[in-house]
Image (cartoon, rainbow, N blue to C red):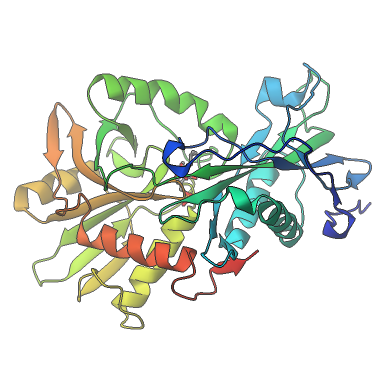
Length: 377
Ligand code: PLP
Ligand code: COI
């Protein structure tokens, strides 16, 4: 039986009567401040998606037996909205987040939904709270759509009830002053994701188990884990970002490599954007300033031995991570088997490729360069 899908035309809005004063942008810490409103939509298997509601930001009331608390029926997205001087609010590739959210939902038997409908509802929310989006360069609104299982039941099985909610947090540049390169510990004691597992989905269950490995890396002086897989120590991701490595070839070309998604890498929106821009540049369809003239772009398996060898030969050009929160983050050191692999970074703490991609992506996100990826709310 077909149950009702999400219907933005039913949206009910109740505005806060006690609006908060947004913090000055310089005081913002990532993900600690929330706007005045939230979006919530309930679902159950008999009646489908209920009326979407935008209401004052407030605690949720859930039964302690809710499936979310026991078996990690929870998944999320991370996306950003930008506000221009004239007040225009833009989302970046929301269709990608909606598609990924639906894939995550399918993976843990939570309900799927019409992604365009949720995008419409998110637009309503960010426009209502747009005063919260700082206009200053480098600032944006981090949007956190979340879907949880809310059935009151301790049996392990699909949740007959669910709730989708969206909260928003104004955020500043990830690094306060310039770009601070990060140090990675190539981690062999823990794995983030395995073939057939859930690493390719944005499930809450993938993140809590990464906290202890990160704390262990931090104790050794590294900021993030470089997640490896298998006996060959194949590189997969860095912390909660996708990974890119650039090598110099003997023929003068530069190869920009990112590991294939397979089943173990989260299909990042920033990863896809960086790949598309770099490929267009490589084909000569577009010039992205900062990217090498002769560029080859590959999605291929990378193993730690490739990095060790490239460091020895002086052919390691850049290593960086990509993700919505920081967009691009350079890596200057990788601890591996008792020593550090040193990686060049540019004068601003960001190599030319990382900087070139970062600048182009920001220009598109903020509407400085018109592009179909940037969607007006
Ligand atoms: N990899 C993991 C494990 C992540 O959690 C994220 C962040 O959301 C990313 C990569 C980057 O994805 P995106 O560029 O869509 O933010
Ligand atoms: C990212 O956007 O890069 C992230 O990894 C988000 C994180 C808070 C889960």
